[in-house]
Length: 147
Image (cartoon, rainbow, N blue to C red):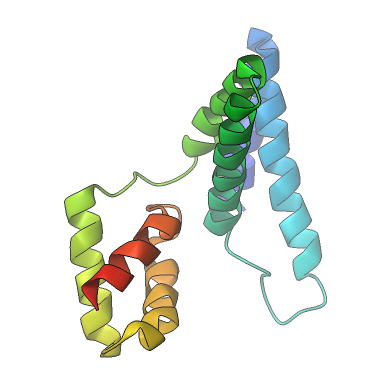
């Protein structure tokens, strides 16, 4: 809930500053969080963590940037990149390569993984602890390389 309050404050600031692009991105974030909250109703808890929602939004926009650049639409790629920057303001600091390596090794040891078949359990541990702090697509390849 405190993230939504922070977002509301940022939205007010963007409105005062007449920063239309930033305002649009902030509203997208708020809408995604409210949608998650609505989807969680009627279940025994949250349908997902707020950080997971933000991480998913970043990933979607990164994929869009790639598609737009391949399609020769740099103006749309720039818009998506700007949205990524705004979303990342609300995510925790990203882990560096050495830190990712260390937490992956620790997660493998924690679950006692011995083969690629245990990858799901390792990813579960990592997502529970480090959502929004690393690219899980790249982490998957790193885990496979360890076996």
